[in-house]
Amino acid sequence: MAKLGHKGNGHGHMTETPDVSHVRNVDVTHELSDVNVPGILKFVGALVVMTVVVYVLMWLLFGFFNAQEAKKEGESPPGPMAMTEQESLPPEPRLQAARGFGVKLENGEWVNLEKREPQAEYRVLREQWDRVLKEGPKDQSGNPAGLPIEQAMQRVVEGQGLPSRPQQGPPQEMTDYTIGTPTAASSGRVTEKGKQ
Image 1 (cartoon, one colour):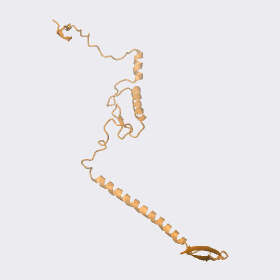
Image 2 (cartoon, rainbow, N blue to C red):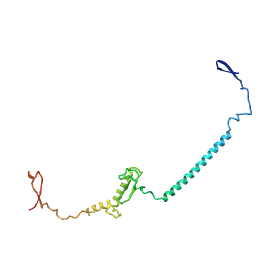
Image 3 (cartoon, one colour):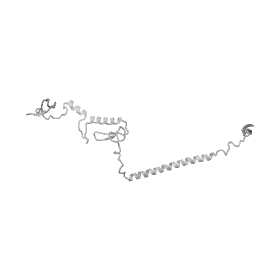
Image 4 (spheres, rainbow, N blue to C red):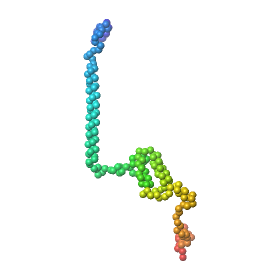
């Protein structure tokens, strides 16, 4: 037997625990009153089912609310102080890759470059320049305004020369006016005198 000692109130009190190591019960593997395993499994299963049901119901509810809001927005016009999308953009010049950033080409076409890499602007402009070199410049309506570079170089080689402005006549001589010599009284000012 094991002896356990306990001193309280100054008097020694000893309790003995009986030795039960020799007792064996083959029919009982665990104490049935400790844990109710089927009850716990039923609770966990019910909890999972209820969680899924609540999730589906919330998903349907928010879908209903979103449909109602979209319907409401479609019916009512925006308020008088509401800005259009163009008005809400920052003023020009805009930062590269920012909202509303883009390039207007020579033909009037707008190329939207927002949220693109910075090199996209150079690529778009380079494509436009290459097209002008190959096809020749065009005006706003798309009509040719010049020659492609290959044709222009071919004309120069063939001897047709480059176009130039016609001369207006001989340059007007500067004989109408004479410039007077500055004097001490003029403080260095030069005056023009009409020719007599």
